[in-house]
Length: 194
Length: 62
Image (cartoon, rainbow over all chains, first blue to last red; front, side, top):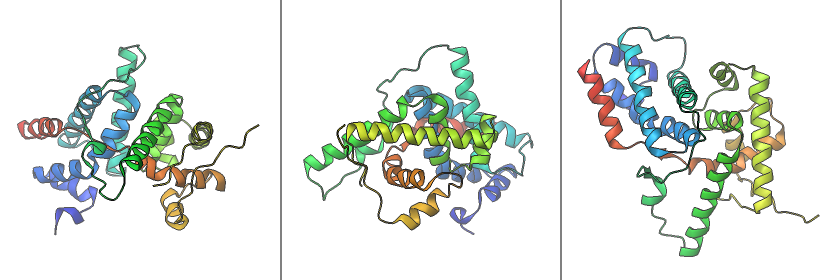
């Protein structure tokens, strides 16, 4: 059976039984979602790399110690660890996060869109840049729900558990996030058509 | 007050709805969320290969 067809749970079992390929596949499968979720919260690619590494060091420790709770899904569990590490960071380092230009890989730097003009490409890149800035402008609890819902594919129940709020609060935050984004998009007259 | 333009909605609303599966949100919210899916997807970033190496090395060292 190919690794790609195995479930997260099967990969976790493979890894616990001593096969490193289990972890390699889990990383390959989820690294972008986990890293993007961290990055959009901390807005600093160097810091995001550190927290990403620390997250997996905790994941590995828990798995190897046999303390992983089989009932939960792997990705929400890892995102919960990442979320707690982000909170720890801001608690320790009571400062406003700043935007830096790190050397992290950016999909826009390497993707080539042969069938679009230079103008179209500039507009598209500017649109995504605007959207990223708008997400950064959202209050942290709204941004968090949006990121967990979209990149983590977490249900509202899982988001509520991860952030220690009720499902209604999680849903309310998502509504506010969408409303705020909608207002900002309308103010900028931004089109998000692909 | 000036009328502002609204974002374009993805034509494949069925898949967008399935993707959202956001029970509890209004239809308007769901439609808007569907319209920004593509933009959100394009914000995806990757960790560096150095980070992946650090993690795998750490795992093997245990």
